[in-house]
Length: 120
Length: 107
View 1 (cartoon, one colour):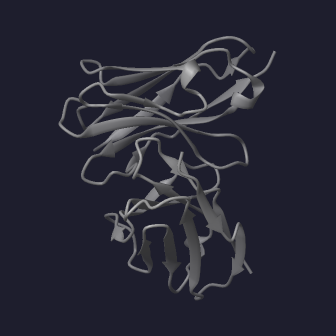
View 2 (tube, chains in turn blue, red; view 1 turned 45 degrees about the vertical axis):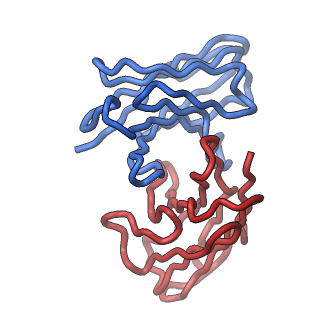
């Protein structure tokens, strides 16, 4: 059974750095073609893709956020970590991680999400 | 980045209706278009990938079609559990983008 679970702080202050961890099971990020993405959704708004890391350690970032983002993986721990610097209240959102098998090219399994509020 | 535009933003329909949601891409994305369903307080669920392939476990009343820049999601015989928000998403570019969503409400 494939599962993903996000963890991290529920509340961060403006200008702080957010670190989120996606812990997964049931698949390996070492497998050819496997990818994991982070996405987010502000309350009442649409989904937004944030970043992606691939089995071969290729990394891709949302164009409008890329100067603030770093994505990394720890294959031995089955974890993907996202850091986002200089947090702002507009970054308040539900943050999800999701798997992308290359045969689908789509986000087929999602975590439950973790709500992050940016407020002083 | 590729812009995805869905229409309508919301619609009201009755159980048993046929519903069609449209998604347009700002440039050709071939058939690299996926559809998701999201219910309140839940993570999105993959319904259809690469335009028309039904994800495992998804009822056959859901179908997708289209190519290049114009795509549709059709729900036949709308069921109570189908009232939700639907998103299209392109996987043509490494920089994935979503439509703004279409909320399907009960008439």
